[in-house]
Length: 279
Image 1 (tube, one colour):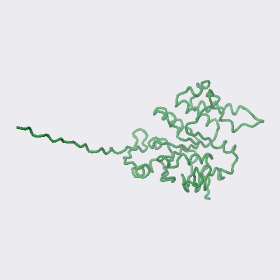
Image 2 (cartoon, one colour):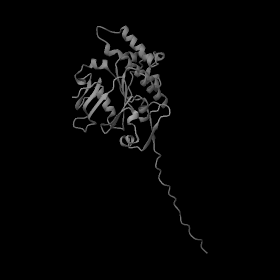
Image 3 (tube, rainbow, N blue to C red):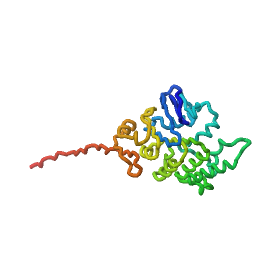
């Protein structure tokens, strides 16, 4: 396998959910830039969430490997991975009646030992994570009573309390309205110093918030790089099958995809012949 300078990488990665089934991801090579926000985009069923699951060791590769600091993820102890990689899956479900403070505290489990329970370091990590995500005032609230945006911030706080340098987020804006989507993505964008990998459906959001963009199609990488370098009308047509214009975002200058005007069917007028009046 090729050496990599990135902490997290994939080499010749092939993924499938069933033995003998057609691969969802095929022979994929991917380097995750350290200290940046990487966003994976692509049409439905292209393999983007499957790839993220493999990067977090939730899915065993059929072929190739995921590497963490040059070592195969499959060979590393679970605790070591949990101390290095934080993973927030799609639509996580909180235990019934759990409070915000209790849920965030669960992020410290990878650091616990039977001889070393809750410590000042744990308390500090939880306090800092809640402050960073602006959920401190919600500490005593039950998670199920919160709004969608608040709940998502709490889940991110739990992942941050894990104190990993690598954070994987699978579609963190799913089911959120536009205001909460922006709220969550602004938070992710300002997690300075951390390496973040997230899957998003919205290409314009991806182009706005990503340092590094990965576009996937049919289980392979169609393009990768800075959004301003790779998001073109040709890419949108090839990956998403959409005719569009790509113009600068008036706020950020990042690429903004504007779908072409829809082609409407030509209206047909049916004329009914009239009978001539009889004499």
